[in-house]
Image 1: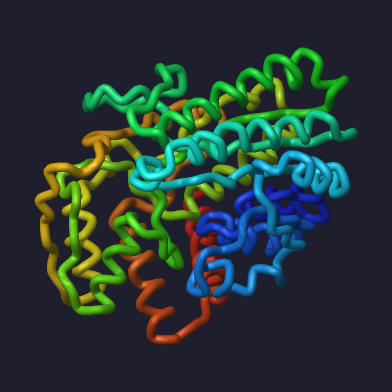
Image 2 (image 1 turned 120 degrees about the vertical axis):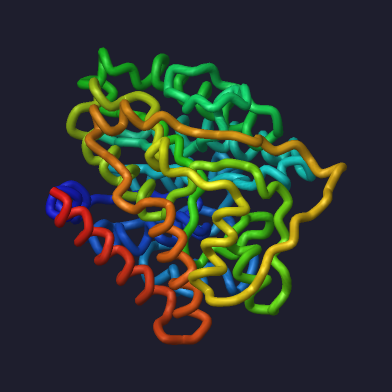
Length: 364
């Protein structure tokens, strides 16, 4: 599998929007290892502790600090770079933050996506685009059944709704300008990737469970749990990133098959509640305890969310290689090693990529 990815990305120009974020930073390291020529386009990281700064992200790409809402600057960067691949990760990614800045969330996540697609529309030559959305794009019925790619889109909170809008924007551009029936003319292919709740080393965002756990453990405080019974499709960051890379490669080769939406998540029988995830993290860390918060007036967040990955498994031939327990263990061990200065952030990411690829190879 590593050979397949290298064959498709080595020497290719790859644009990553949102490269200064958590997943974007991991993707930079992996693409660089595959031999890609990378441009990143995103806002500056918010703090010095952000993963992009910890890996010295400018060493992995030509980094452009910009806003996806600045259409003229974004278009010029894409036009000048002429990428073969675009991975669009730039977003306002937090549900609770979307309640604080709803209009900005809709602008960044929806109009920002339209700006990326419109910039790709006017460049010459072949370009393959993977738009990263979220598992939260579905109209959540709070039922126990996993959502399929054909299920209705929706969104209670501004974040979820804005990402559902991004899916609609993408589908409109795909139908109107990047139609697979005329791909030989426009030479563009576009797909969307809907990933579950991603965990992994180096994420320091507020209002995310793993960073909250690590910060509490570092300061020897109780771990605050807002929604301990909430069920989420947890997965290690390398799982969806592998999916994005695999999707991009296959989309470039056969756009008629892969120009659609794809779910990436754990197996449906491999899910944990927030509370169980926290207890597992405590076991790996070796100490600590939780505190269930009584927040009667907190913003609404989904209680149950599961993804059906059968289409991705059968057609894309992607599947999860780490179960949830392994994902949590690998994540917490990453933080422990980083905090103890056993390895730096780049070394830890490279080690996890190597281990993950070995696991894939051994399973084939």
